[in-house]
Image 1 (cartoon, rainbow, N blue to C red):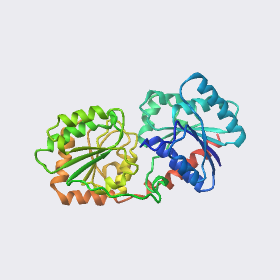
Image 2 (image 1 turned 120 degrees about the horizontal axis):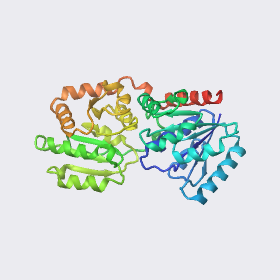
Image 3 (image 1 turned 180 degrees about the horizontal axis):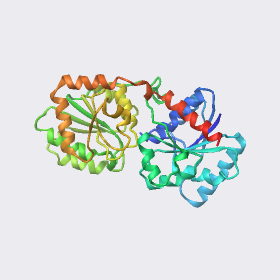
Image 4 (image 1 turned 30 degrees about the vertical axis):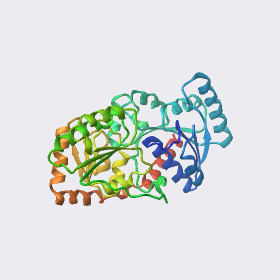
Amino acid sequence: MRILHVLNHADRIGNGIVNVAVDLACVQARDGHDVWMASTGGAYEALLSRYGVRHVRMDQARRPMTLLRAIINLRALLRRERIEIVHAHMVTGYVLARLLRPFASWRLVASVHNEWQRSSNLMRGADRIITVSEEAIGRMVARGMPRSRLRAVRNSAIGSPRFEGAAETAVTLRQPSVVTIAGMYERKGIADLIAAFNVLGPRYVDAHLYIVGEGPDRPRFAALARASAARDRIHFEGFQPSPYPYLRAATLFVLASHAEPFGLVLAEARDCGCAIIATNVDGAPEPLDGGRAGLLVPPHDPEALASAMTRLLDDPAERDRWRAAARENLEWLRIDRQHEETLAVYRDARTS
């Protein structure tokens, strides 16, 4: 198949949408498909090239003349390379492709990664619409998305080309360690985690919290940490190219999201055999096999989060049971499963 992925950029900054698109493009090219990616580019270009994915620079900044040039360039690319599937991962790329879709022979597939965003409604006109969890389909249908075009392809992370052959340096964390890996956004529940850590802090005076990631809300979270009685034991580690050194060193891994389409990092935490605590919200239970591979707590509830953390820190045997549970039934979280299911959606779109 001749496949074009369209997204805003290909930078290595911890963006889950970009990570998914890069993984798919690389695995598709590895398996013999002709694959292109159109974006403004970034650090992943070298990886894409190694796998045989041809990257085409295409600025999609929302300025009239820039978008006009993008449409002209996209139209030329589609004709020149005889593209069969356009896979749009972000709204701007989808809109550009949708404008060119009438009377074209290629098919348009849109991945809705953050279905709670109102802008995702714009993607309703795609030939097939991919959601990243089964749980999201019902909410999208309730908002008027056409059920006949919706397909759930759950995200994967294990076996990602992004980490193949990468040299990793082990990190030394103060123990016991509570680790979270997330973008610094309000919806990731970092404020709740800091509050929960403050609750259990007096009981576990040797515990340390490691917050890995970057984003626009980091200054607010840093201010909360400075105001905490446990401020000397809360560490902001910034963006890390690989989550694995922190996951392998963690006593507990916690994801306290208020909204979570799926959570690639939960699959990565399972791959490392972490004892996992996550909020029972949106698609987050799915990578944890509905709560069989990780402990689920209500969102927006620092007290419940602190209670779950205390429970696992108090009981090493239970913590080991959750570690063992995380390592079970991992095969479906491998990137090859997502690749095959995505190809099935492409074939379905071509027959419509």
